[in-house]
Length: 255
Ligand SMILES: Nc1ncnc2c1ncn2[C@@H]1O[C@H](COP(=O)(O)OP(=O)(O)OP(=O)(O)O)[C@@H](O)[C@H]1O
Image 1 (cartoon, rainbow, N blue to C red):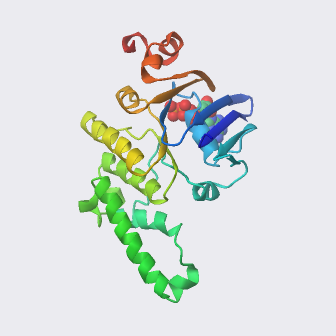
Image 2: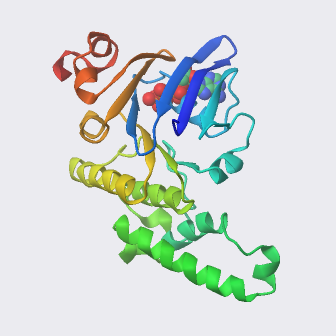
Image 3: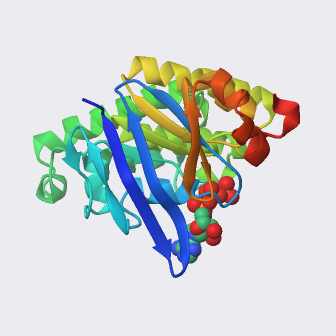
């Protein structure tokens, strides 16, 4: 069974059909891309997958269970985490606190455990600290653990956002333009990290990206959206050579 199964998903804003009959299937451990021109409906699709928007039609199933009508935090608890096109960190908190907040949302001790400082609170906090530091190491941010998130350079803020999404222990990770604003060196390092976390954490990843070197370098399967509709899907090689994709998005120089 597919991990994520999206069938005939559509949404309209007034007269605009932003996403129309989107069908998409991801198996466990897939590393897939969602690409297309500006305004094609990519972020809107992510917003439906994460419960920010309620689709007008269609269904979204994770492991066979419909996510329709669930709130974003409930979808996160089902194992779906995301990052945003415009970075949304807690800028006035330290790097490590940004991660601990994400771990807290899954903490085993409750409010009373924290207030009364029950034994589970201390072991839980220690575990969160250790897991946060492990993630920071993976994303090459461990030396910045005390720094305010706002003070990090842009590329590091993007990596921290992915680390924070990982702290909610997802099965499906949605990355919205993870390389935006990064230089080629940072983009290359990010590509390696994405591959590594997919393998290491047994993840399924769907990413939106305009940087074709990243998409073609890291994704094994690509979906192309144009005016809200899937116009092609396939391997990077198939997508690069697809006439419709070249005309709508990639341009002649990509072929
Ligand atoms: N809340 C909303 N209300 C009205 N229109 C919206 C809303 N959200 C998105 N849209 C419209 O839906 C269309 C798809 O937008 P979306 O942001 O999903 O595109 P995108 O493919 O992610 O573009 P980009 O690559 O520029 O991020 C656009 O025409 C956008 O203006």
